[in-house]
Amino acid sequence: MHIETLKVFCDLVDTQSFSLAAERNFVTQSAVSQQIRTLEDKFQRRLLERVRGRREVRLTPAGEVFYRECKNVLVSFDNLQESMRSLIGTISGTVKVATVYSVGLHELPAKVREFMSKFPNAKIDLEYSRTTRVVRDVLGGVVELGVLAFPEPRRGLTVVQMPSDRLVVICPPDHEFAERQQIKAKELKGRDFVHFERDVPTRKATDKILKTYGVDVRKVAEFDNIETIKRAVEVGFGLAIVPHLSVMDEEKNKQLAIIQLAEKEWVRPVGVIYRSDRTLSIAAKKFVQLLESK
Image 1: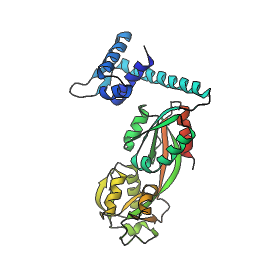
Image 2: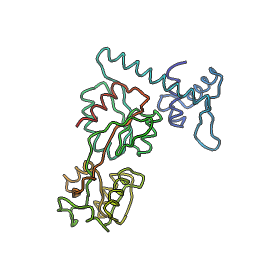
Image 3: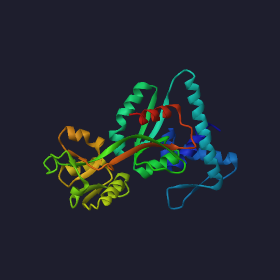
Image 4: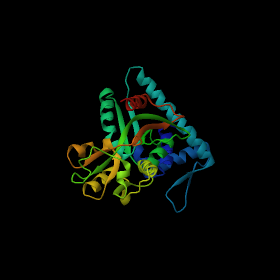
C-alpha cells in the first residue's frame, strides 16, 4: 500500500467526486476506483457507499475510521518531508489556501508576492470561495489555511487575527455625497443600497450596525461578489458599504468616490483559520506569520 493510495482515498471523500480525485492525483477515474477496491480488499471492509440517485459517496463506519487515520498518516508524512527539507534550510512545498473574493483579490496579492520573494521554493495555491465553503474546506482538510472576514471562534479551529480594515461608503463620482470626507450612519437613512447577500459576514455586520443606529436603507440589489457590487454602484444603482482596501484602485482611477464612516464600529476584522488538531507545515507557518504582521 502506497501513501499515494491513501491520498486518493481522502481526496475522493473530500471532493465527493471521482473525476476531481483523479484530477488532483493525475490518474484516471478508473484508477481511482481500482485503488478504492484494493484498499477494501486489503482490509476486508467496505469503506465507501455510493448514494443511489446522487453523485456523492458516503463513508461506512469502517470508512470513517479509515479516513480519520489516513488523514493523520498524510499529515505525518507531510511533516516528515518538511523536517527533512528543513535540515538543509529550505522552505518548500505548496500551501493550499481558501479565501473569500474581497480578501483574496485585494489584500492577499501583496502578501503572496512577499512570501514568494522570501521563499522561492514554496508556493501558495489560492482558491476563491464563499465563507461557509472556506470553513468547510479547512475543517475537511481540503486546504491547510482559510483567510476570511469576520472569522468566528469555532470548535476545532484556530483563528489568527490579521490587520483589520475599515468599512466605507462608496458612490459614483457625480453623487451628492462624492465630495464628502465623512458621513454619519443616520445620513444613510432611506438611501438606495447595493448589498452583499444576506449570508455574507460583511452584510451581517453592516445590517447590525445600521440597526444599532436606527437606520433603514432601501435595498436595490444583492450580490455575493465584491466586484459586481462595485460595478453596480459605479453605474448608479445606489450606495454600498465595502472594505476600504477593496476599492482603492477605483478611488485612484476616479471610478468611485469613497466616504469614511464616522462611527468607530465600522471595522472589518480579517483572520486566518486552520484546524487546531493539525500541525501546520513550515511553509504554512511562515505564511501565517507574514499575514498577521502589518
